[in-house]
Length: 456
Image 1 (spheres, one colour):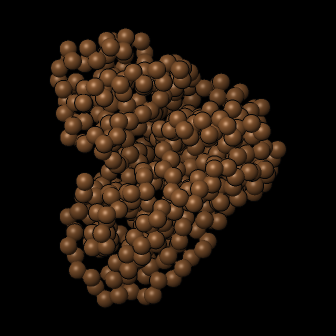
Image 2: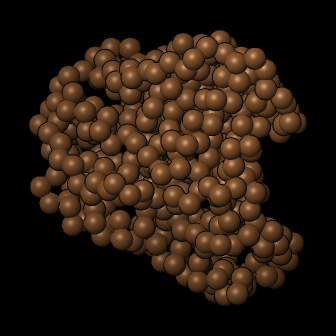
Image 3: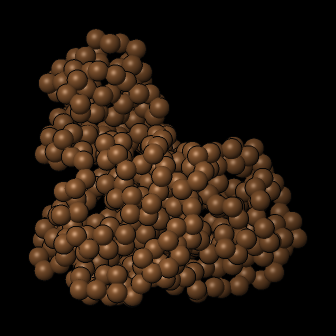
């Protein structure tokens, strides 16, 4: 499959992300979108990222721009620093997908590019280089500045007394994450560090990873991690149970005093049931859709996704100081906010028990081309008997449908099933929301098995 824009930037197989293709997209980006005076470039830890970052830097410089090599840094750290400097930025990352794939995330000085910007980039492909800009300069302060934003807001003792495991794997954020927790007063121990790339999807944590978290958990108050580029958090409790990302989001938004929250239809309905927000707005899946709705809403608005990535749309106040807005997915803010809140009430178990009993299990069928997924969804949408038969096999009946992004069916039981095609890979995604993790997991397992038969 040729590289294409999905829910989070340009993605494709490494073998298809040729220097010519990458350079063409960079030239189109700086032609079609505002860049300020510079383009800052970061990268994750996957093996293909250094060579791709070098292509990005050279292509941007070849368009006459100053370029800044920020090295291996988390995506939110790069975005934060570049926006503060009034510069554009490009992150070389495939996020949570396997190492045979990679991608580019684009930011203007105002923030993450929009879907309109994506169309403009595609329309500008084929631009020729210009006169070269200045020699690329390196910058090493991007990661520390990302950590300092949170430490300033929460204070040096915010996590004092906690013993935290840091699941390092191959996350570019791993050392900064551990350093941030120590700066906030916690003790940290690294677990599961890997020098080969490990794809970690915080929205669909694998059974093997869950088993590792349970094995590592004894002796820790919690285990923390992120996905590969550090914009999606992972938090497991003292027994290794993963806290769903949308629950992290609704707690964080509440703690920070958000009045409006924006979240995709894939997030659980806890935000509405909690009753702590004046408005809950639902969007299609992908941070560009969340950002667009946040900008339209204005005011004390926050956004989050089911993967846990959190977007802060207003100038907030932390327990110890100001917390500047950051309108792109961040992992560090929700991890620290939830841990600090848990510490105040006696632990994660107590904190989570106060949230509405809504739980989402997420899974996928891999190597399912988008056309096949769309044909399956179209069949279920247009043939009520086919949908009824599918739901009956799960001992459920339908109540109402939402087609904001894929097919989301609220069931007569109050549970929810949501089917959609992944925007980043050839996958069919399934989300099951229920009143307990056990019921959601059972719905997911049975639903995936039924879908696999239909696609066979």
